[in-house]
Length: 386
Ligand SMILES: Nc1nc2c(ncn2[C@@H]2O[C@H](COP(=O)(O)OP(=O)(O)O)[C@@H](O)[C@H]2O)c(=O)[nH]1
Ligand SMILES: [Mg+2]
Image 1: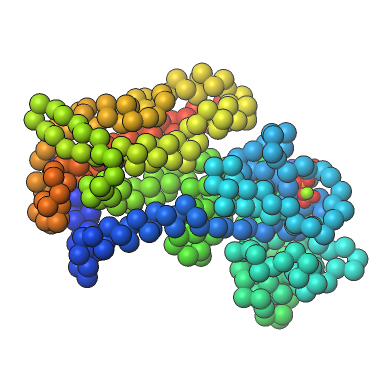
Image 2 (image 1 turned 90 degrees about the horizontal axis):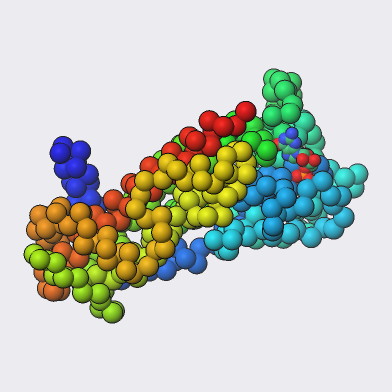
């Protein structure tokens, strides 16, 4: 089909660009570094605001947790310490949300506060206000800018407060005076994260982060809306040819796959790891489905009833081999020759282009299937919420 050919041209262009200035082995080395770095990337997000503004609630929601869930930040507690508390993502422990002490107490000094919470640690700050922005918010923002860090203003509890932002013009004019450009304010509800501006906030945070941090933030945040689902799919799609190239050139314990017409080797471990990642990213793992069921008032079985991908079983090497020898192989044979046309280096490795094509199509097929399943689950969940 035409769509298929356009996509193939895109990958071809990207691979050619990568290989324009280096040979295949060094490109593969860089790709390997890229994935290793991805596993190590650290991201620290500070969440601050007055006591009771909804910091802890937003931290829980960003981690896909309800206030009552195990490991969630306690809400409705009086903040007594000046020590920030870290809340790591279970599946991405290097990504942490930090619950900061409340600001705006009578002796509040932005400069001291930032020193006390060890401002250097954070990639950026989320400053929350649940009613109006005040002087303490402005001073904190100005001080953060001085320290060359980034911040986002969030108006929380937006489900509960109907509030006219025009009233706040005064505040934003004041910000300009102290050297802060009028920032965007994101309207968020920690209780209904999928509504209002969360999608926009997420997009903005991602845009302003360096590439390697953007990727991990995108993967860590819960899959709660159709837009986010689609962006996650696109982000994961970008890595597929790189994984295929690794598999095609890897020397470690290959799994031989013998089919009537084809024989080649793949690194099944790469596929297993990536497929498990897809599950987590799309919140299709049992724990996430359970939480979504609780939130939406549907049973887990009802959510599961729309799942179509054959992947909803234990993901291991046996499953991967079954997938590789399945229907996608029809395309693999022809595509292998096509890939070889601009990846001549693969010819030197036994059936490298076949391995490349097989991994490429298998991952693509699975990604598409799981993203589609996740999309349907979200639709079912939304239908039931009253
Ligand atoms: N309606 C509504 N209430 C919220 C929201 N976020 C927090 N709350 C409530 O506000 C209170 C304080 O929230 P909490 O997260 O503990 O604030 P913190 O002191 O800044 O950590 C709790 O009773 C929350 O349930 C929200 O988005 N909507
Ligand atoms: Mg709190």
